[in-house]
Length: 147
Image (cartoon, rainbow, N blue to C red; front, side, top):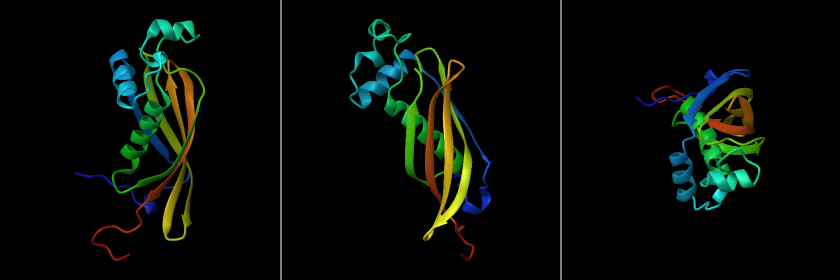
């Protein structure tokens, strides 16, 4: 059954649950190839070490997709991502688990839309590797219920 989070169910301070994936070398290689990011730092461990990284690491597109999946899992298919801004703080490396989560900062109305501003962060290897902010549009009207 499809889950949809409605605007009247969301409050400031509400947590956005964790969405996590292991960063296996295979996952990093497949993701980098799928978006044509052929920089060796994302698929060649030795090359990445030569640049100062511990090993190959996740690229920006993978982290953005993880934040999108985190928000989608929370808000369901009825919500819509309006804005996502991220800041890479440290490497999210092969062999680590990338765990994304967040917290609602505020819920507001803009025109006819109900918006939630969300603080996001991701941890990898026990450290906060990425921070971000998102704005999502949440449905107000429930099917079968007068608006």
